[in-house]
Length: 399
Image 1 (cartoon, one colour):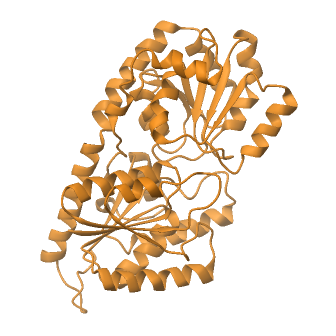
Image 2 (tube, rainbow, N blue to C red):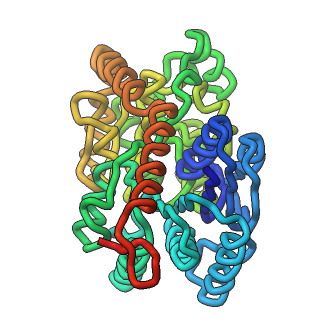
Image 3 (spheres, rainbow, N blue to C red):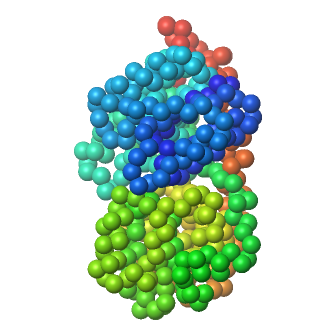
């Protein structure tokens, strides 16, 4: 097969890591793979080197931007149509909202035999204005009519789209975002070594969050409850792994409060260092307000670390309350503090949930399972293209 992936930005993020893993597996399976992406900028890092190592052909689309920019978006649409006409792919697979909307429109117009979109996260959420949410819902409805399959990384993604009239029930497939599970089999001494590198005492309880520094990810909420955590565990450390546009604000608040000892910012870390920082944690917390499948929660579980998160998006598909961690109502900070304190104060419970979480993550989130399921979707779509009913223009009719 000739496969084209389109994603908005190749930053160091979950959707991007998922896409790079797909490219690598598909090249290894003998497919011809292209990866189209917009400019990489800002403090969130880059996956360009990892993407090039997959063997896929990378093409930067300068007009593909994250923000709604009508002139750029129209130029991007025209460039994508021209490229797709030249490449003649069997499958176009889009990722992220902007690339998904413009990319599906271009692929559909060019009569690509298979058009697939993965929903990595919801573009509409409570922290957007009502006007912005209506705009995204309208655009997603438009784009859903211009693809053959919608892949949700969690069932929550499918439910949210259908509840807003986006897509049809038979159009959806759930394929969890996979990862290399073996990377998290680290030696026992890793925990102590990484703690020493970060200046964390061996006996200090550590609550970690691995996420870009962004208002939607909930780092501010963790700072809001830090006093409650310190009241019971004075030596507690809050380990913030990642970088982002909200980094300066978070660091300024920590400085104002005099928490430089208690709050540790690692900045951007390469993917190969994530298993080590997971090993240094006792609890992984992700009080995110908008989330598709929380890959960093899966990574924590693969490392045997129990998780705490808000009930937002696909978090509840990974943070199984009482089984792999504790699930808290969205934005409820007292519940967030209580859940974290409960785990920090009970080593046996942490161990139990960590072991259950590791087994759950290994079973459901191995990247080989993801890429196999994805190839099956591609083949089904192409078979439908070959055998399905035709419209008056000779193009397969939508049902």
